[in-house]
Image (cartoon, rainbow, N blue to C red; front, side, top):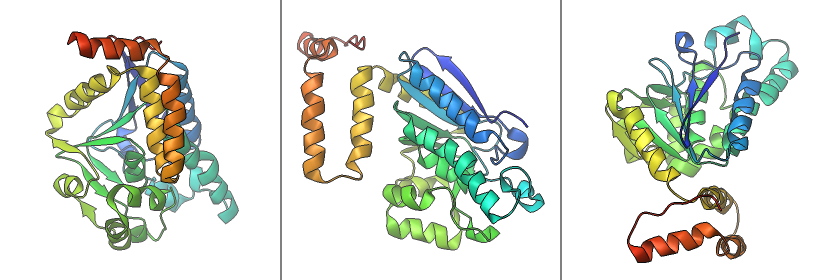
Length: 266
């Protein structure tokens, strides 16, 4: 078994790299869920980290589930239907839940194909930047499967129900330009500029007050599943706390003084 994910820290930024380039960063080996959950726990405990980037090693972001392992009935795909079900719930879904629960902003730097589960993982990020070498597809039906990784929940929230249905039903793989037109990614850059662009964006995000930043991400997530009145109540309660932080006073003074703010997380 090879470790799925690597973690590097560069100042206030964490870089997560899917690191199985020989299989196009496919998932499904035993322990993958624990590997991702463990890495996300390290990030959650490090209050110096203010933003994270997720990318893939080699020529792919992630090709999704390992088809060879599926055909062989190995790893996550071994055993009877009940065992495979528990493999999804206790392994692959563990990884997805951990990434979704990250409380710092997450940027997916999609360096190559993001297919099936790989596309679902990219969609868990708050922001997606694509290389011109990227491609996106949810091709489960083409291999005789259904979307098994929560993609039917998250993809319509990003690109709308009609376009999500079109991708799921046809298995079509789309290029970065179409992905940007549909709102799946926010920008497309040359391959050599991808990580530079992602790091620059992450640094811009990391310059914001850290606790306010995490609270804003939480409010964005809550706003997807609550009523407008509930969202207003959450905003009022959270804002009441933020008015009493030193970072609020620093931010207000910096605007009045016409200088950059220095947020310390206090």
